[in-house]
Length: 331
Image (tube, rainbow, N blue to C red):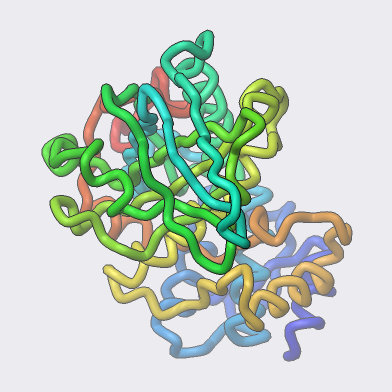
């Protein structure tokens, strides 16, 4: 069976059952049966042994279809916990030259004097935490903290006339406190407001270089304006930027547990396969490929392995509202 035929079956309310080796009506199955079907398809997909109509593409489409019909589990013990710490320098004072090197600017901001700056950052990360829990269907739980750093950011990296940050630029600020706090992701925020803000290479990016004192952690740099931080709603500009950079983070994590499935780069050729699968499923053209990938490509089996490797720490920080009263593993 071709992948497009799998999409046709799914749109008519059927799902492939490995145990029955046949297509069955979703409405005729109890939720527990659908979870068993999902787990069996995940096992086949992860092993690469075949046995799913449409091959790997068909398996991803079926897994996405099931994820939309199953309720989000808050009491399971397989969710992967990401522990992220948002930090920002109390002040920024960075001199820089224009492309011709004829004029010297000075990007200067007192972040500590911006009203409720830490609260605005925490609010945006919380929006992303809720959104991530939703689009991953409970597979990924983002816990986060926000703290200022007493110190001054004084350096940017310049390349091809544009500026960015890297771990070396902030090494004097972050010290070695993060490994002890079990941080998976350090989010470093740099304000961009002001007339002398330098031209940026990107507004958000996951840096490939490891932190010297925290080899398991990754750094996401976010250059954000106050206008972005004031945005409301689920899909704010900051949330959309974080959605992409956390995907890169998950790509690096799943390799640690030898995941063999497809985790396409948003900028690579294979991401077009996601667009094709979404089309076969009948999804609208404006449906986000990230929303699809977080629930079709990341398996419960993979998250369980990540949880075992990186542990779950109760009450580490703010979490999705669904976990305020129920933690994965409480069942």
